[in-house]
Image (cartoon, rainbow, N blue to C red):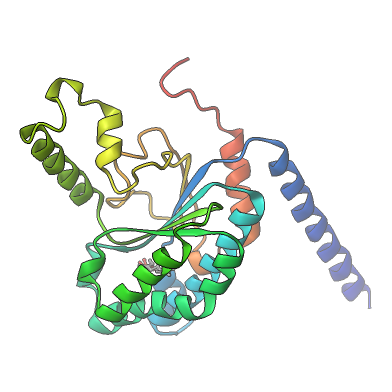
Amino acid sequence: MIESIKRLVGNKKREQGKKELLEQIKKAPLPEHVAIITDGNGRWAKKRGLPRTAGHAAGMKRVREVIREADNLGIKVLTFYSFSTENWKRPQEEVEYLMKLPIEFLKTGLKELVERNVKVQMLGEKSKTPTQTQQALIKFEEETKHNTGLILNFAINYGSRDEILRAVKNIIDDVQNGHIDKEEIDEQTMNRYLLTKGLPDPDLVIRTSGEIRVSNFLLWQLAYSELLFTDTMWPDFTIEHFHQAIAEFQRRSRRFGAV
Ligand code: FPP
Protein backbone atom coordinates (compact mmCIF):
# COMPACT_ATOMS: atom_id res chain seq x y z
CA MET A 1 0.00 0.00 0.00
CA ILE A 2 2.68 2.47 1.07
CA GLU A 3 4.73 1.47 -2.01
CA SER A 4 1.84 2.25 -4.34
CA ILE A 5 1.26 5.65 -2.67
CA LYS A 6 4.98 6.41 -3.05
CA ARG A 7 4.79 5.46 -6.72
CA LEU A 8 1.76 7.67 -7.22
CA VAL A 9 3.51 10.63 -5.54
CA GLY A 10 6.63 9.94 -7.62
CA ASN A 11 4.61 9.90 -10.86
CA LYS A 12 2.83 13.11 -9.93
CA LYS A 13 6.15 14.83 -9.21
CA ARG A 14 7.59 13.65 -12.52
CA GLU A 15 4.55 14.93 -14.43
CA GLN A 16 4.84 18.25 -12.60
CA GLY A 17 8.56 18.41 -13.52
CA LYS A 18 7.76 17.81 -17.20
CA LYS A 19 5.14 20.55 -17.15
CA GLU A 20 7.55 22.99 -15.55
CA LEU A 21 10.25 22.17 -18.11
CA LEU A 22 7.81 22.90 -20.94
CA GLU A 23 6.75 26.20 -19.32
CA GLN A 24 10.42 27.12 -18.86
CA ILE A 25 11.44 26.52 -22.49
CA LYS A 26 8.44 28.48 -23.76
CA LYS A 27 9.71 31.57 -21.94
CA ALA A 28 13.08 31.79 -23.76
CA PRO A 29 13.81 32.06 -27.50
CA LEU A 30 13.48 28.69 -29.22
CA PRO A 31 15.94 27.41 -31.80
CA GLU A 32 14.58 28.35 -35.20
CA HIS A 33 16.02 25.27 -36.92
CA VAL A 34 16.59 21.96 -35.13
CA ALA A 35 18.43 19.19 -36.99
CA ILE A 36 18.56 15.65 -35.64
CA ILE A 37 20.82 12.69 -36.34
CA THR A 38 18.53 9.88 -35.23
CA ASP A 39 21.14 7.30 -34.30
CA GLY A 40 21.02 4.09 -32.28
CA ASN A 41 18.02 2.29 -33.74
CA GLY A 42 20.04 -0.83 -34.50
CA ARG A 43 21.70 -1.03 -31.07
CA TRP A 44 18.38 -0.39 -29.33
CA ALA A 45 16.90 -3.38 -31.17
CA LYS A 46 19.92 -5.63 -30.61
CA LYS A 47 19.80 -5.01 -26.88
CA ARG A 48 16.25 -6.33 -26.91
CA GLY A 49 17.02 -9.33 -29.08
CA LEU A 50 15.03 -7.81 -31.95
CA PRO A 51 15.96 -7.38 -35.62
CA ARG A 52 17.50 -3.99 -36.54
CA THR A 53 14.36 -3.17 -38.53
CA ALA A 54 12.35 -3.23 -35.27
CA GLY A 55 14.64 -0.44 -34.07
CA HIS A 56 13.84 1.59 -37.17
CA ALA A 57 10.11 1.05 -36.64
CA ALA A 58 10.44 2.27 -33.04
CA GLY A 59 12.56 5.17 -34.32
CA MET A 60 9.90 6.15 -36.81
CA LYS A 61 7.42 6.47 -33.94
CA ARG A 62 9.75 8.97 -32.25
CA VAL A 63 10.15 10.88 -35.50
CA ARG A 64 6.38 11.39 -35.60
CA GLU A 65 6.25 12.50 -31.96
CA VAL A 66 9.07 15.01 -32.37
CA ILE A 67 7.47 16.44 -35.54
CA ARG A 68 4.23 17.02 -33.59
CA GLU A 69 6.01 18.63 -30.70
CA ALA A 70 8.21 20.85 -32.89
CA ASP A 71 5.03 22.03 -34.59
CA ASN A 72 3.23 22.55 -31.26
CA LEU A 73 6.14 24.63 -29.99
CA GLY A 74 6.29 26.76 -33.13
CA ILE A 75 9.77 25.71 -34.24
CA LYS A 76 10.26 26.91 -37.83
CA VAL A 77 12.44 24.19 -39.36
CA LEU A 78 13.02 20.57 -38.35
CA THR A 79 15.49 18.36 -40.22
CA PHE A 80 16.06 14.62 -39.84
CA TYR A 81 19.11 12.79 -41.14
CA SER A 82 17.25 9.67 -42.23
CA PHE A 83 19.54 7.98 -44.75
CA SER A 84 23.07 8.91 -45.71
CA THR A 85 24.82 8.24 -49.00
CA GLU A 86 26.90 5.71 -47.03
CA ASN A 87 23.86 3.83 -45.70
CA TRP A 88 23.53 1.92 -49.00
CA LYS A 89 26.34 -0.29 -47.67
CA ARG A 90 23.98 -1.82 -45.09
CA PRO A 91 22.49 -5.32 -45.56
CA GLN A 92 19.98 -5.35 -48.43
CA GLU A 93 17.09 -6.33 -46.17
CA GLU A 94 17.71 -3.33 -43.90
CA VAL A 95 18.06 -0.91 -46.83
CA GLU A 96 14.80 -2.23 -48.28
CA TYR A 97 13.08 -1.70 -44.94
CA LEU A 98 14.40 1.85 -44.58
CA MET A 99 13.27 2.66 -48.12
CA LYS A 100 9.76 1.48 -47.24
CA LEU A 101 9.48 3.87 -44.28
CA PRO A 102 8.60 6.96 -46.37
CA ILE A 103 5.95 4.92 -48.25
CA GLU A 104 4.39 3.83 -44.97
CA PHE A 105 4.67 7.33 -43.51
CA LEU A 106 2.93 8.76 -46.58
CA LYS A 107 -0.02 6.40 -46.06
CA THR A 108 -0.39 7.01 -42.36
CA GLY A 109 1.08 10.44 -41.74
CA LEU A 110 0.51 12.75 -44.70
CA LYS A 111 -3.03 13.70 -43.64
CA GLU A 112 -1.90 14.98 -40.25
CA LEU A 113 1.03 16.89 -41.76
CA VAL A 114 -1.33 18.59 -44.20
CA GLU A 115 -3.74 19.44 -41.36
CA ARG A 116 -0.83 20.92 -39.44
CA ASN A 117 0.21 23.03 -42.46
CA VAL A 118 3.65 21.32 -42.49
CA LYS A 119 5.79 21.73 -45.60
CA VAL A 120 7.83 18.61 -46.33
CA GLN A 121 11.08 18.83 -48.29
CA MET A 122 13.70 16.25 -49.18
CA LEU A 123 17.42 16.91 -49.04
CA GLY A 124 19.36 14.43 -51.17
CA GLU A 125 19.31 12.61 -54.46
CA LYS A 126 15.81 11.13 -54.71
CA SER A 127 16.41 9.55 -58.11
CA LYS A 128 18.69 6.88 -56.60
CA THR A 129 15.94 5.54 -54.33
CA PRO A 130 13.56 2.74 -55.46
CA THR A 131 10.68 3.91 -57.69
CA GLN A 132 7.95 3.58 -55.05
CA THR A 133 10.05 5.41 -52.46
CA GLN A 134 10.79 8.14 -54.95
CA GLN A 135 7.10 8.50 -55.74
CA ALA A 136 6.29 8.78 -52.03
CA LEU A 137 8.98 11.43 -51.51
CA ILE A 138 7.71 13.44 -54.48
CA LYS A 139 4.11 13.12 -53.28
CA PHE A 140 5.08 14.46 -49.82
CA GLU A 141 6.65 17.51 -51.44
CA GLU A 142 3.86 18.03 -53.95
CA GLU A 143 1.02 17.73 -51.44
CA THR A 144 2.59 20.12 -48.97
CA LYS A 145 4.40 22.61 -51.20
CA HIS A 146 2.01 25.49 -50.53
CA ASN A 147 1.97 24.95 -46.78
CA THR A 148 3.35 27.75 -44.67
CA GLY A 149 3.91 26.14 -41.26
CA LEU A 150 6.76 24.01 -39.97
CA ILE A 151 9.31 23.16 -42.66
CA LEU A 152 10.14 19.48 -42.28
CA ASN A 153 13.24 18.24 -44.09
CA PHE A 154 14.18 14.60 -44.52
CA ALA A 155 17.78 14.10 -45.58
CA ILE A 156 17.54 10.89 -47.59
CA ASN A 157 20.47 9.66 -49.69
CA TYR A 158 22.17 12.78 -48.41
CA GLY A 159 25.87 13.50 -48.01
CA SER A 160 27.20 16.94 -47.21
CA ARG A 161 30.50 16.72 -49.10
CA ASP A 162 28.58 15.67 -52.19
CA GLU A 163 26.18 18.59 -51.67
CA ILE A 164 29.10 21.03 -51.40
CA LEU A 165 30.85 19.59 -54.48
CA ARG A 166 27.68 19.93 -56.54
CA ALA A 167 27.25 23.51 -55.35
CA VAL A 168 30.85 24.35 -56.32
CA LYS A 169 30.42 22.80 -59.79
CA ASN A 170 27.16 24.70 -60.36
CA ILE A 171 28.78 27.95 -59.26
CA ILE A 172 31.66 27.35 -61.71
CA ASP A 173 29.12 26.69 -64.49
CA ASP A 174 27.31 29.91 -63.68
CA VAL A 175 30.55 31.89 -63.62
CA GLN A 176 31.48 30.43 -67.01
CA ASN A 177 28.08 31.16 -68.56
CA GLY A 178 28.16 34.68 -67.17
CA HIS A 179 25.28 34.37 -64.67
CA ILE A 180 27.51 35.34 -61.76
CA ASP A 181 30.71 37.27 -61.35
CA LYS A 182 33.55 35.41 -59.61
CA GLU A 183 34.38 38.50 -57.54
CA GLU A 184 30.86 38.57 -56.12
CA ILE A 185 30.88 35.02 -54.79
CA ASP A 186 30.37 35.11 -51.04
CA GLU A 187 28.76 32.98 -48.31
CA GLN A 188 25.28 33.99 -49.46
CA THR A 189 26.08 32.74 -52.96
CA MET A 190 27.10 29.38 -51.53
CA ASN A 191 23.91 29.24 -49.44
CA ARG A 192 21.85 29.65 -52.60
CA TYR A 193 23.53 26.68 -54.28
CA LEU A 194 23.09 24.26 -51.39
CA LEU A 195 20.09 21.96 -50.90
CA THR A 196 19.12 24.02 -47.86
CA LYS A 197 18.65 27.12 -50.05
CA GLY A 198 16.38 29.61 -48.32
CA LEU A 199 16.53 27.91 -44.92
CA PRO A 200 18.20 29.28 -41.81
CA ASP A 201 21.25 27.31 -40.63
CA PRO A 202 20.52 24.82 -37.84
CA ASP A 203 20.67 26.49 -34.43
CA LEU A 204 20.69 23.16 -32.65
CA VAL A 205 21.98 19.80 -33.89
CA ILE A 206 21.10 16.78 -31.76
CA ARG A 207 22.75 13.39 -32.17
CA THR A 208 21.49 10.45 -30.14
CA SER A 209 23.19 7.17 -29.14
CA GLY A 210 26.47 8.49 -27.71
CA GLU A 211 28.35 8.89 -31.01
CA ILE A 212 30.24 12.17 -31.02
CA ARG A 213 30.65 13.06 -34.69
CA VAL A 214 28.69 14.78 -37.45
CA SER A 215 28.96 12.06 -40.12
CA ASN A 216 28.83 14.19 -43.27
CA PHE A 217 25.69 16.06 -42.19
CA LEU A 218 25.18 19.74 -43.13
CA LEU A 219 28.92 20.50 -42.85
CA TRP A 220 28.67 24.01 -44.30
CA GLN A 221 25.43 24.85 -42.51
CA LEU A 222 26.44 23.82 -38.98
CA ALA A 223 29.43 26.17 -38.74
CA TYR A 224 27.85 27.97 -35.76
CA SER A 225 25.27 25.42 -34.61
CA GLU A 226 25.07 24.32 -31.01
CA LEU A 227 25.86 20.61 -30.98
CA LEU A 228 24.21 18.34 -28.46
CA PHE A 229 25.24 14.71 -28.07
CA THR A 230 23.17 12.43 -25.87
CA ASP A 231 23.67 8.78 -24.90
CA THR A 232 19.94 8.12 -25.31
CA MET A 233 19.20 5.78 -28.23
CA TRP A 234 16.83 7.36 -30.75
CA PRO A 235 13.91 4.95 -30.04
CA ASP A 236 14.14 6.01 -26.37
CA PHE A 237 14.18 9.74 -27.17
CA THR A 238 10.99 11.11 -25.65
CA ILE A 239 9.33 14.51 -25.84
CA GLU A 240 10.88 15.18 -22.44
CA HIS A 241 14.36 14.53 -23.92
CA PHE A 242 13.47 16.92 -26.73
CA HIS A 243 12.46 19.59 -24.22
CA GLN A 244 15.68 18.99 -22.24
CA ALA A 245 17.73 19.43 -25.43
CA ILE A 246 15.99 22.75 -26.10
CA ALA A 247 16.55 23.85 -22.48
CA GLU A 248 20.26 23.00 -22.86
CA PHE A 249 20.36 25.06 -26.08
CA GLN A 250 18.76 27.98 -24.23
CA ARG A 251 21.43 27.80 -21.50
CA ARG A 252 24.27 28.13 -24.02
CA SER A 253 25.63 31.51 -24.89
CA ARG A 254 25.97 31.96 -28.63
CA ARG A 255 28.56 34.51 -29.67
CA PHE A 256 29.07 33.69 -33.38
CA GLY A 257 32.78 34.44 -33.04
CA ALA A 258 32.26 37.74 -31.18
CA VAL A 259 32.91 38.26 -27.45
C1 FPP B 1 20.41 5.23 -37.45
O1 FPP B 1 20.42 4.17 -36.55
C2 FPP B 1 19.11 5.36 -38.09
C3 FPP B 1 18.85 5.28 -39.42
C4 FPP B 1 19.90 5.04 -40.42
C5 FPP B 1 17.48 5.42 -39.93
C6 FPP B 1 16.67 6.45 -39.28
C7 FPP B 1 15.37 6.60 -39.93
C8 FPP B 1 14.25 6.88 -39.27
C9 FPP B 1 14.22 7.04 -37.82
C10 FPP B 1 12.96 7.08 -40.03
C11 FPP B 1 13.04 8.08 -41.12
C12 FPP B 1 11.75 8.43 -41.62
C13 FPP B 1 11.41 8.71 -42.91
C14 FPP B 1 10.04 9.09 -43.22
C15 FPP B 1 12.39 8.65 -43.99
P1 FPP B 1 21.43 2.98 -36.83
O2 FPP B 1 20.73 1.97 -37.66
O3 FPP B 1 22.68 3.51 -37.40
O4 FPP B 1 21.65 2.45 -35.39
P2 FPP B 1 23.00 1.82 -34.82
O5 FPP B 1 24.04 2.89 -34.90
O6 FPP B 1 22.63 1.47 -33.43
O7 FPP B 1 23.32 0.64 -35.67
